[in-house]
Image 1: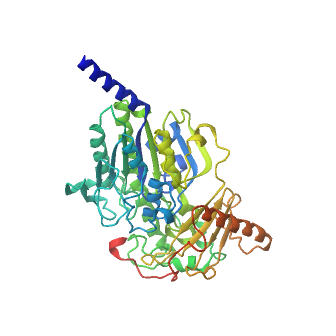
Image 2: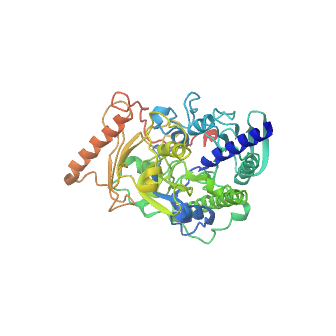
Image 3: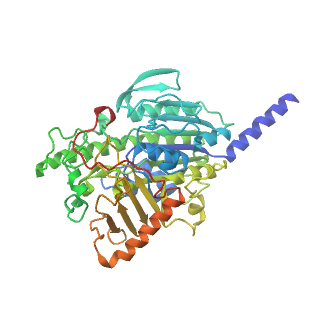
Length: 489
């Protein structure tokens, strides 16, 4: 009788686990939408990621609310804007007392793990709350032979290519999980973050592909002055290009070859990420877990590759804001869907928790896209705001406060001391000019449009607790040309 009762408990636990999906959440660093085949790349072949999109959901207009690694990652975990979770730069730790969606899942009975690049708390590689198993490293990590901290028990240099190594670790952990308990695996890739170093097998994949500077790199006459000043800095196309250009600044036409090599290196790292997704999917198929696993693949922020003469991110321009998000889970949709509405990093936590049947995080800024995907959502947002704070360590981008609607974008640059904007504002009609080639801020006939966007921006910010009295930011000290400290690049 006792044995029968024990078997019943195991069966009940297994059935309960089957009602709740596993979660495989894969986060890339600095991944552009157009570096994936499913988002239209002409050169980068990503068949495994594309297959997820072809069997699930592709969010066509997905964005980060702060285009910087640590703030964006904290927003993904918490569903909150950076000024609320407090991670406003790349050197701040995710608050230990603040819940994240993995913490909620752990409390709800999930086995949880984080493996790979965490990148909140630059020098902290110790385990964080909410994870049964936590493996990361200090700082950025290296593409080859990174030293990992294995859940606080040992530090060890693991030989091999980063993407392959963390995929191996992920598979090892998944193989240890029991069918009676759902799991949430959060895999953080280093790729395709600088300094872009492909696996040897992909080093020369794009040698024959010519990559010119984008046309917008030379369409700067109506742009604010700071954009031209950035051209010759660490974050400009004539600068060192993350070590791909050894002698700089260099604005000679033939120096575009350094830019091309940089882009080739970036693309090459993405190919290994696609290999990783293929291995993970194959394991889920082999073990019969694929259709009961919510797979989310995304980037933390966008990346400028020459647009407006810039590299890196941080700005409110489209290439900096736009991120890829792909999700596969048959209970969400059995047919492939492309979602045109604006989805944000702050929407990820509430979406995962709803799909897992877990308690919601309280008082967050994001909204679950489960209903949007399943049946449409007439109340979905049509506008949102973006903010970034000037960094003394990277003095190449001003303070930014911007609003993006379905059709328009307005960007302004507060000085940081309450005085009027330091720089010329920007206004773009995204419907007619998705490449942001024409700054319309000086058009008198659009003054009323600007006023409406300014009012909507103030309203959106106030709804998250940001008002002129509470919106604290560093003083904008202007664009500088010195290189950042090598330790934080």
